[in-house]
Structures are given as C-alpha cells and as structure tokens.
Image (tube, rainbow, N blue to C red; front, side):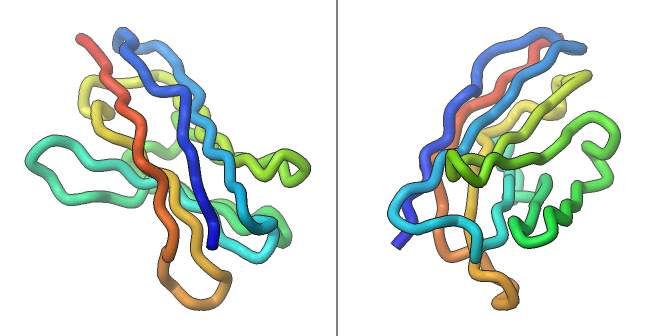
Length: 119
C-alpha cells in the first residue's frame, strides 16, 4: 500500500506560480511512476505530468508544457509540480497518483489539492 498526501495548493493571480508537493508513505516510490492529474469543475480528469524514478524520465501535457515541471526527491519520497505562468484555465483540483512501472495504470491516489487562478 502507498499513501499519498498533496500540499501546496491555493489561490494565485494569473501569471503567478505555485509548487505542489506529494509525499508518499508506506513503500519506497522508486518502483513507481508518479503522476499529476487535475480535474476542473464539470470536466473530466486529465493528465498533467508524470515521471519515473528510474532514469528520471518525465512527460508533461501539451497544455502545460513550458510552464509546469515535474521533479522528485527520492530521499524524501516526494514528487513536486512546479507551476509557473498560471492561467485561470489551470484552476482545478490537482491529484497525485502512483502506479507500478509497466502496468500502465495508477493504483494509488492522493486526496487532491485545490488550485485556483484568478484573472
């Protein structure tokens, strides 16, 4: 079992920055792919970014490319989402997720953290 706890959400003006954190407990995250997803009101959940601890490969959605960066600290079992140049359309609940490498799915989810970007 893996428990994920997100933090760092809040209210920010357009153009501002936030850094979300997701700390995992229960097992080392080194065997997992860690992902960030978001869900805006009335919309489906969408992929934002992910990274594999092994090799540190990352990917980000086209809608946030160049503005958001995913990174991790293995020693702290923590993954981060640095969000810059925020736009009102980035407003959503952001979720951290973990999945075993190679399965193609995320088995563990955090409770989510609200990000609100005002215009």
